[in-house]
Length: 127
Image (cartoon, rainbow, N blue to C red; front, side, top):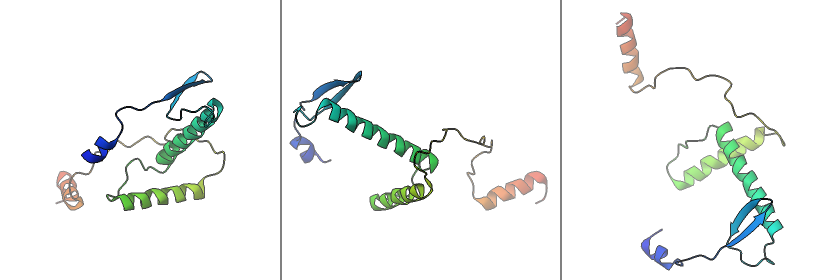
């Protein structure tokens, strides 16, 4: 957002608080006739499900770090992950959030493979 767009925004926002089932929901929808407390509660539940599904998608598909750099390619990468996820997902499936295997205590490869191989040969006396 540039400075001109930022300056065009209002200085304050009027919000509405609604208590539903022990939760306080805050919304910019002021008219109760437009969005009742029950409707807001349903929307909150749907939003919560979407967020949990995204978290599950990121964990299951190991997409916590995306490889692409441009916005268009990131969009395509996310779409490909979602397509693959939907192809293998069963409705109502629940999986524990735990890794089945412990990570191996190996260091990261910080040198070119040829240099790393040469260093291993030197340590083993194979030159």
